[in-house]
Structures are given as structure tokens and as C-alpha cells.
Length: 148
Image (cartoon, rainbow, N blue to C red; front, side, top):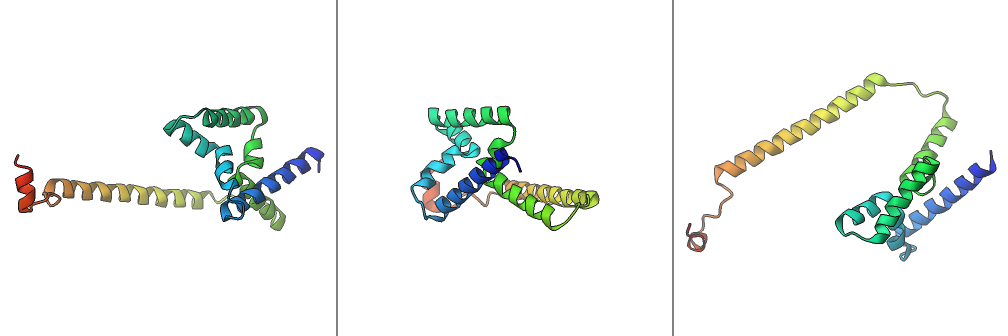
């Protein structure tokens, strides 16, 4: 194992443990600082309530990713670190993982079908409520307030 890889794994482990401690409440002061270093919270802050710090974080993460590839995901993103650990453990436990193409497409089709059926159900409920008139307030005080 090369020296660069050992350094990356050490920094990733340190950052992952720090994130766990911050979000578990042990290091409360870090919980306010560490999400600012993540791409999604910084991007949301930049888009909703613009700040120069959020813009600098987004541009910095983008520049690091463009220059060094998945360095951000391998070192600073807790989900990326967790995926690397799970991948390492699964490669260590078993050999080659077979490709379950049919299973993947079946799961995707079921998820897509559930998404479509939920959307159709919500749209039909909205149509039924919107045009049935049941949502209107029919109390006498409401009729006096809204005379039109």
C-alpha cells in the first residue's frame, strides 16, 4: 500500500469519526461547522440565502473534484467513506460479485411503478377534493365574511 493511500485512509477515518462525534452530540460545536464543508448543504445555502462562504465551499469542492477526481467523496463525504468501507469489506469477504441484471431491472420497474401509482393516486385525490366543493368552509360566519 502506497504512502498516499495510507494518508488518504487515515484522513478519511479521522474525518468520519469526527462527523460521527459531531452528529451524535459529543462535539456539539462541530455540528455547526462540518455541514458547511459538505456539497449539498453548501449548495442549498448558496441557492436559498446567498453567502460568500457557501459559494466558496461549492466552488472549492467543485475545483477539488475536477482536479483530483473522487478525492472529495473518498475523504470528506461521510456517505462516500461509508461506501468505501462497505466495498472493502464485501471484496474481502467474497470474491467476484455476480451481475444480477434481471433483478436490478425488476427492482427498478417495481420502484417506477410505485412512483407512478402514488403520483396518479395523489393527482386523483387532488382533483376529487378540488372540484367536489368539500374543501370550502360552509359555516354561516364564513358566508358573512366572504359575501362574493
